[in-house]
Image (cartoon, helix red, strand yellow):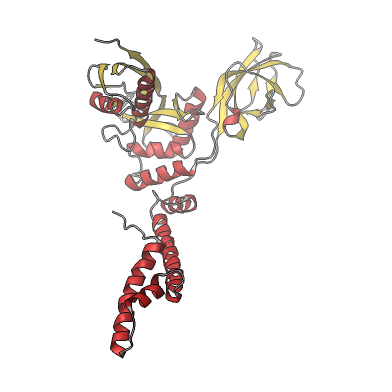
Length: 384
């Protein structure tokens, strides 16, 4: 339990009591006549000279205590302010992920045999720029699919499939450019709150050179990762599957695109190479998490719109905490166990709920190894 810091008023009153006793003892020892009323007025009244001094000292003492308490909070990463979170992270070697580029692919239609250079500049109607990752040649059928990357970091370049682009410079050989695989993965720089959580996780679970949780840290250095799960021997002895969910623009989980999976594998290290961050002998493959709705059926009492809204909020909160710091039963939301009793407890805490019957799920169950849970539709059962 932390020691509370007294207010300046309390400190001044405590000093006044001590000074009253001390003055009386000194005056008695010197044989000087006094009255308790006069001493009290001097040390406690707003017009007493000694009271002015005590109050000035009390204010300064309170300020010193506050400053010391502030410094105490900076010594621990979970209570530190932003500047000191960055300092803690640097001490432990935890990187603040830079803003990332959106990646995707485009279908280019034009004259067969046309060679398109790497870094060919493409533009959207908003003026956002993309560049081809490698040289491509329009095939005999008049089309070619080429991977591309946004030239500016951040979520603004996350574009849906089907959007039309054009070249920045004139290319009469090109008739049309259409996004084939949605541009995704563009994200802002890791926030200080995310860096704080990453630093705490690093302290609790230091890197082990290839432990399962190391893959989450390695991917988080370069991608806006929502959840990671490792599956040993996924395609045979000695192999390791890394199942990944990525944050969308709202911070929720989504499946990574094929281009993102390729970039993640390059980051970790392709099999049978000495590339990347993984142990050199690890045969790693990257898999997209399967976004899976978790449905429930509830009979609330009372059954009112306000209670239903509170239960929906409680259900969303339950899903969001799967695999979190407070969920000791799941290390990650991917493949998590849906504990029925914990769900009942969460719904029971909903504002306005007096009682309820949780009909579905009827018992605890575990998601599939690749499944990432999201809150599904709530079915409201009628009165029994």
